[in-house]
Image (tube, rainbow over all chains, first blue to last red):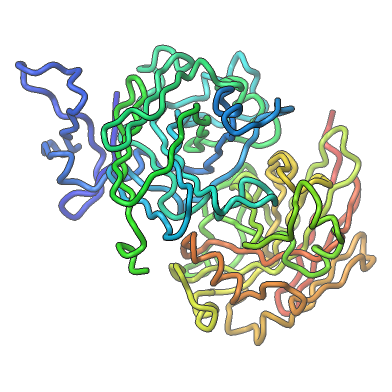
Length: 263
Length: 231
C-alpha cells in the first residue's frame, strides 16, 4: 500500500494512488493522481504534498555508501556516522527549497528513508526489520559552504528550513520485497546525475537499527535516512531535482533563490 | 508534548508553554567552555574557532523530567552535565531580529545536556549525547515576564549538595537574543521548541550514585540521580 498526506480544499487528507483506467499501465512512472480517503480523485498538481507520515526523531547517516565516502575522501569508519535533524527542516513532494545567494556548493542527496513502526530498544540485527513500518524517498540537501569543523555536520549546513524532502509516498514494508536491493536515481532538469543501489550501503538497515537501538529507543514515526551514493552535484535556482527509488516513486523538488523568500 | 521513551511531563503544560518535543542547544557558547580548549581551536581538526553557532539536537528519547534517573552505561565511569538556560519558543520564529528576538520567547526552563565525556568535538558520535533520558529539563516553564533579564542569571550546579560550578548567562558569547537571531536565520523555531543557550566549561562530572541539582535564579531547580546501568 502507498499512502500520501496532502492538503486539499481546506483540509489535510490521507490519500492513495488513484485507480488507473483499464487502458493504462499501472507502471506509468508519471502517474500521480490521488484518491482521497473521502473518495475524491484529484491531480497531483492540485494538492499540497506533505511528508507522507508524521515524523518523530529524524536520524541521518553521513557517508554510508563506499563510493560517496571515497568521493569525499573519507577514511574507514569505526561506527556509523549519525546525525540528527529537527522537524523544521521537513518538506513534502513538489516543494521548494531555498539556495542562499553567494554559496558555491549546494547539493541534493537521494536516500532511502526507513520509518520505524514498533518501539525498538536493544534490538538484535535478526529482529531489526520487524520494527520497520515502511519506506519513502528522502532528498537531504547540504550547503557545503557552511560546513565547519565543530560537531559535524553542523546544523547550518545540514538542518536548514526546507532542506529535508520526504515523499511522495509512504510504502508499507510488506510491499518492499528487498530494501537491500533498490536502485536510486537522481535527475536534475531531466538529466541523470546520480545512480546507486541500496545494496552498497556500508551499514545496512538491520545494522543501523541494531546500532541505534542499543543506545536510543526508537519510536514509531522515527525515521532513518540511510545515506546517499556518489553523484551529488551543485544545484541552482530554477533547477528541478527528482529523486527516484525502485518501487517508491519519484520525489520532485525545485530550487529557488532568496528573492522568492523575501530576502 | 510527544511522549518520550520514558514517561515525561512537566508542570505548566498549556499553550504557549507546552513543549513541542524539539530541543536544540548551543555548544561552546559560554566563554568558559571555549576557553577550556585554549589554542587547540586553531589546530586540526578544527583549524579555526566556530563561526556560526555550534548546535546540537536532543531527540525525544532523551527528554526527561526532574527526578528521573540518568543511567550510566557499562564501561563508562562518569557522565558530564552541561547546565544551561533554555528558551521556550512562544511563536514561530523565523529570521527574527536581535532587537525583537525575546518577543518570540514564551518562557524559560533549565536544561541539563548530559553526555558521555568526549574530547574530540570534530565529529563526535551521537551515542555520547542522544541516549535515553540524557536531557532532563524543567522543573517547569517560567513565563518570560517573570524573568527580568535572561542575560544576568546565575546557574549553579551541585553534586550531592556540594557546589560544583557557578556560571552566569552574562558570559555567553551569543546572549539569548543574538543566538535566536543567528539560529532563526536558517532554521525556523516553532512554538514549544526549546533552545538551550549553552553550558559553562569544564562540565561537572558525576558517577554512579551521585545526585546533580541545577539551580537558575527564578526558575527553581532540576534534580536528577545518576545510576550505573545494570549489566
